[in-house]
Amino acid sequence: MADGDYESVLCVKPEVHVYRIPPRASNRGYRAAEWQLDQPAWSGRLRVTARGKMAYIKLEDKTSGELFAQSPVEQFPGIAVEGVADSSRYFVICIEDGNGRRAFIGVGFADRGDAFDFNVALQDHFKWVKQQSEFAKQAQNPDPGPKLDLGFKEGQTIKINIANMKKKDGAPAAAKPRPLSTGPSLLPPPPGNKAASQQSAPQEAATSGLLFDIGSFSSSTEPAAFTDAWGDFTKASGSATSQSSSGWVQF
Image 1 (cartoon, one colour):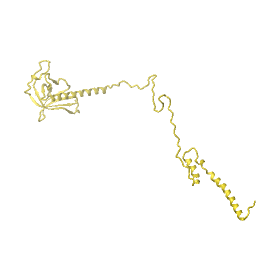
Image 2 (cartoon, rainbow, N blue to C red; image 1 turned 90 degrees about the horizontal axis):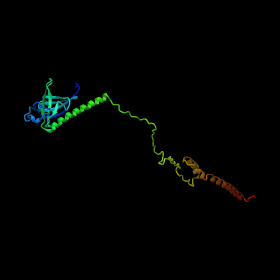
Image 3 (tube, rainbow, N blue to C red; image 1 turned 90 degrees about the vertical axis):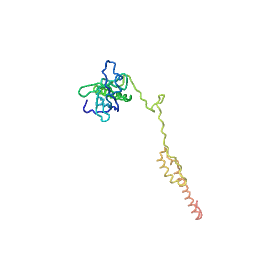
Image 4 (cartoon, rainbow, N blue to C red; image 1 turned 120 degrees about the vertical axis):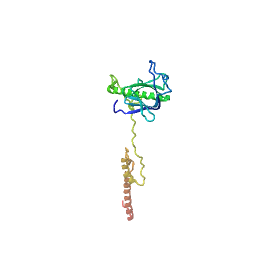
């Protein structure tokens, strides 16, 4: 038992009776009917504690808590705690006085549930002790186990399916055509602002991303030619008028 181990309480029962038991005559086990159950030798409180791997059954006074007897339990079931053959409420425990002397006494519970809790507390403790021993053995001798082989065997291949790469029939999927941007629709310039339309239309066509020049559909050159043609006529008519005002026109 290590000095650093702390003591934990596993079970406390407020009422327990202690009996003097006769020597066991044969190997058939103890029988509580052979005890004087109506005349217990002592009554008090039972407390089960644990320190490290060891468990301790302590019989204490109900009022003062003074220790009456103690039974160290190294394993369960074992010689330190043994049940009787004719009842589940009575047990035979081996007590020690600390000087090497031992004695076997009978212990009984008034309630069957208290006897069940006492039995389960000892079972759970030594189950935990067994698990700790197994963990310690595994830590000293770790089992490497089978190695995981992630390499490819001879002739082994894998297939990778990538979405949208192939059709169901195996033919490559055709790329979807990307629509061309035609830009915003442009209205023809109003008839009263032809000069402004002649200057703004080519610039708008260049910035709209169209494939053709809208200015090529305008009649920017025609008004100039038309004006020049009538300008000659105007000059001619003006000279004719000036000549007629002088009198006669010479041919």
